[in-house]
Length: 263
Image 1 (cartoon, rainbow, N blue to C red):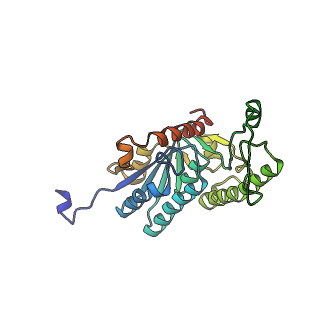
Image 2: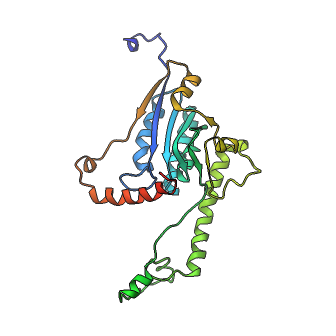
Image 3: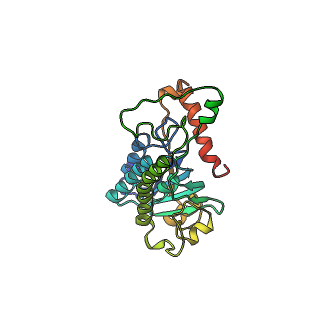
């Protein structure tokens, strides 16, 4: 009935976007293509604020950047504050997403940080040699077999990987500095991929305080504020169980990322 009486003030509401899981291009992962409609919808609703529920060990740097940039662009266009609430972990790309918010709140046991870049792979040359398997590679372009897991690791490949990681790491650092500004403790070594727990992250300026979402939003916007959870729709293939192979491979990759943080 309230919506039919135009002169009555509408209760304040905050859309809640859940950013849970690894970041990448798979059907299970957080990525800009899947989240764009959700993020756009949240800001079009004319809320008093938007909340991000972050629980991610990271993943793709590009997808982290795209998602965070979309959130910041809409926040500035619509002049809507964004608050991030970290659950178990906001590390690596997960922290990149959290830094899209105006402020970041953590649980006392939340893991935060890992501002770095990693390349992980496996090597099988000894196993192949024991099995009598010969690797034959013909390339046009000397870098085409770069970091081949079936060949012995080469010093030049390691140097090349480090050269690729440098600009990505710097982009991450720049994003954190723009977001956190003078709140960061400049006397601390924050960008060496370390992680911190709860209050430690607050003391270093990586986050703003220890607080949970519901009480904090009530403190900011009043006891009558309404929280509106927004979730991603599952694709037809997912609903019918037709993406089993992709889901299985994605689960293995997810498990490896979460395991780095004991989760």
